Length: 200
Image (cartoon, rainbow, N blue to C red; front, top):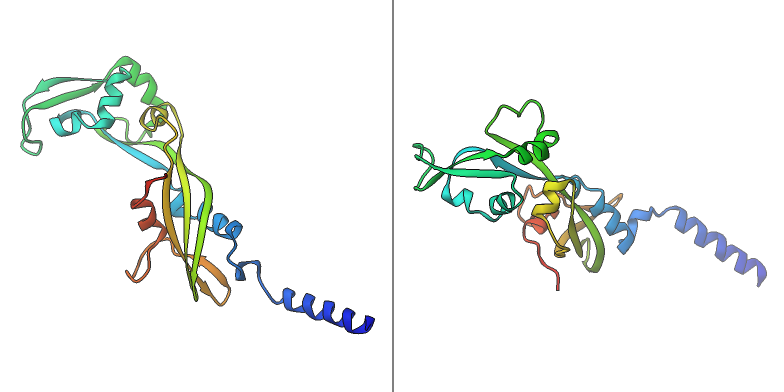
């Protein structure tokens, strides 16, 4: 009996040795695959435009926040041919805005009127469920924006939580995350983040 038990343990150990940790889609593996993906870790950027802008841009929620913080100001201006409809605004950085944005704008973009400002990164909070169907699985998770600087803290004020779904597929070497869609038969992580909904 003892030999049979020992043989069983050895056989079980050999079977486990033939399996990769990626063969079993656990919440921990799903979390690691999502949190480590290029799509999820890509920084969020706010595209800032100074000079003559449309009223639609100047009254957008982002520009209103920048105005409230005293970082930009605007004076009415004649619209350019590619900026319409009127009214238009000539947007400039205030001295406080120059101080705030100086270190956030790459030197190659500093003379430009249109530049990208990194503002936040996604922070994965919890994998809330996994639904498997053969070699395909939908992974539901919640996340939030984590501000990268003062501008990000202003634009992403509060602790709003978002719910997204990522699709994973099992290959011969284990489960993989579908990050971007090349064919529309599967939902990618990129799609899931674009279609994120406020978490309940």
